[in-house]
Length: 282
Image (tube, rainbow, N blue to C red; front, side):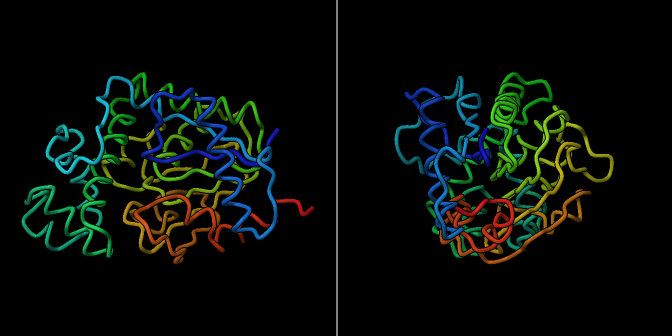
């Protein structure tokens, strides 16, 4: 039994290593980051990690270092997801002539400028992010989607945590896993940098399909969402405009200083304040 189960976002697949090894290593990283934010020790045994990245990478080519042309090789489905995201960001330069009226490379540059991000890193991240999102959401019954969802559910069932913390695409996988398994109960679900509300690209593809609004999974006692003002993946905001059962929606500056990475969230005062009542003091 662990206090926390963490669920990763995009860009966490590690080739050539056993999933159990990756999960153990990432659990330690998350435990140290959470402890730094809380300002008190948190044993690595108190954090378990749901690693599903390997399920989304099967059949995909191995990247050979940085790829400046990755955006040019996105599939039509991946490109459509990027287009939905750009529309949600409402960048005048991108949307003035309709959805994706300019090359993806130029659109990514506009995103980088809007959020004061490095242009090359932004292009690389956009390609990586939407490849993985598309791999998960390709079809309701896609094997990769089922395997990733069941992986997360199995880790929660095994460790019976009081708290589940999910980041980025992991918020989508966790949302579906908890809905698919209403017997799983957690005191607190924390979503970080979540794209759950992204219209058409994510929101309208969720399982179960939202009628007009999404709903908190039955086994979750409390749901807190945290998004940074400078996180362009966490659209639209606030999340409680699109989902019933979000008890607290924190839109604060957690000073990410990097594109959507989880470390800034895990160490943030905003998350520490949410977790503090649930984490026993030594």
